[in-house]
Image (tube, rainbow, N blue to C red; front, side, top):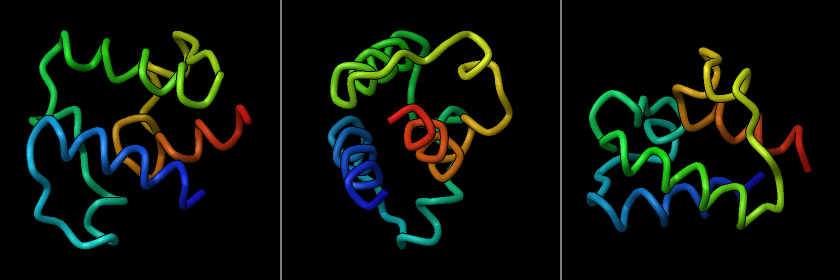
Length: 79
């Protein structure tokens, strides 16, 4: 799971610097203000390419995907 969290941190931190503890990052609602709609699409594609998975509409529409911890759990469940 740490590999997933590191990828998510590195990706999001590259777009906009993060000033969060690990605990804060896991609860971070990145969709609320960190990414615009185009960046969200790029983020999903980057995740799919990095982990060789497919995020389905039910994944991207879920409440779980709204936090880093939830997103990491979705990714982990597809590996």
